[in-house]
Length: 276
Ligand code: SAM
Image (cartoon, rainbow, N blue to C red):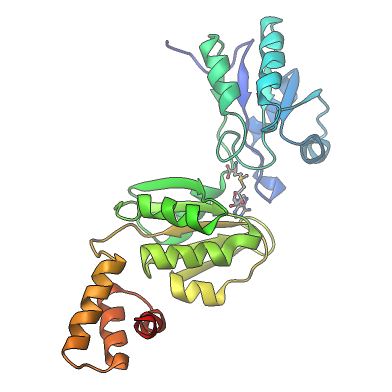
């Protein structure tokens, strides 16, 4: 089904909002929020702050992850009545690691226009500045909070040759980066913290360097270079360790050789040797 998506009535507008800096509101974003009849949002307190700042006052409908099934029915009813509705999330683009997909899917399947407005997004803002290949990338979003699940998710993307993009919240950044190091190896990365805010910081370097350096405050986007053909499988590492041991090479030299060969940390290999 073809949709002519510039303007119109009975439409759902997907409206990104700032990820920190309120000046990242475009003229079109402001005009759209001023024009619609109602705004579906994740948290009314968060959206009210922004709307008050813009001096826009509209009825708000809660569309968080617990209410999507019911809020979509209200949105459908409003569209049936000829109204225009905006969908926002707390920050950045709705639907991107945020609620919205269920609404968009349902509204599209009912034949109403869904109009995307351009605007702020943390993943692409970080990617632009990462200094890591931007030609092909995989946006993963959040990894699981449990170490076992997180590391299994990382194994599933380990040999992809595309730049990897993850979101992470403040209290999990170090364990998350440690899982990346142990599963993906010591790859080049860029960790963008508090983008567009006063304390914006971009850490660039090997995962092992960034883990030591990172300040655990704020929100993060983690960008990691894709797989370049080196296989960091533990069995292969162990095989090389065993081979070098059989040659009578001292542990300190083995750690150095294996770390260099797999692009890993010398101390991690040394620890592995002690465990054997
Ligand atoms: N919908 C948003 C978007 O389009 O970017 C993402 C929402 S998701 C619930 C929140 C996550 O996005 C944070 O935990 C963090 O990983 C990332 N994020 C959001 N704002 C950020 C910022 N200012 N700096 C760095 N990362 C940010």
